Figure 1 (cartoon, helix red, strand yellow):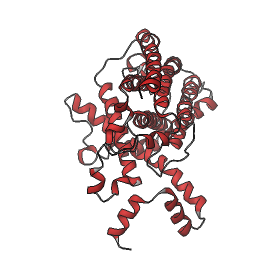
Figure 2: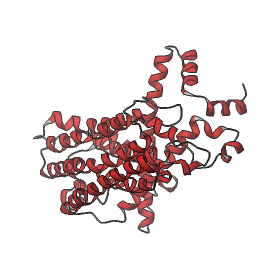
Figure 3: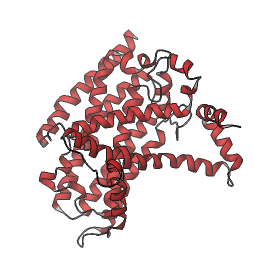
Figure 4: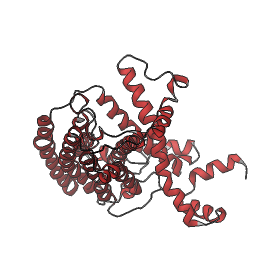
Length: 368
């Protein structure tokens, strides 16, 4: 089989075809193939965090502040993040003498596990999803909340007042903002009639592209969409909700005492969570792996746009767009005070989330 024929076949084959191919040539057959497929999200998180996550945020902040950002290591500073990782790998693993060693060590791991396990139900394409659970959206919301345990373990285990203050702030913030976030996602579940994240994508397919997305099908969808986006900023401790990491007050918040690879794992978990909440927005409101282009694109590209590679391309691009907005807001908006943060959650977002819930129910029953 020559390369021109191999490329379109690869871009249109489904997960069963991949599994059969892996079973045919791998020494341990299908089980090993599934393990490799399961490792793909881990590799994706690492590469995305190194490139678009860390390097991209440095450059975006630099351009917004009329400076250059990293320029010394590699062309345009492209290798700066890799150099930082190598530096962190060589750093001594320091544990505070008075720290609770067990909590201090497991904190970063629990943080990363909370963000990584959510990728199991994230559909990267029509044929690539780790587990198509009928309660996938509920699972994603619940497993991301596991990060609260890691943050509290890191803050308490550090035996540092700044770390403890940061952990308490973060737990209060995340738990509070999960309420409007969950209600906003329930609006999407009502529009879809399911909690399966793969079904969200299938229900937003159509020949007119983005016009079939829930955000454009239902005029009420804009309200829960905005509510969840704002709440997701608070859930990931991004500005203007970065009170748990307030440099001017708490040094670095709950990870003040961390260094070396533990510090790197915490940042990897943060960027993983940023992509996860962005991908949830894309799946629930913006068609997930569906192309926003009308079907004319499929005809012109000889059906390549319907394959798993193009599906992964679209959901990743949508996720990266919302991550860019998160970075943009970080270097634009000032940090909220604690009272302002809680006021916004309990007296603004939560009431409007309930209003959106009722309006969505009315629309789905009487207008759809």
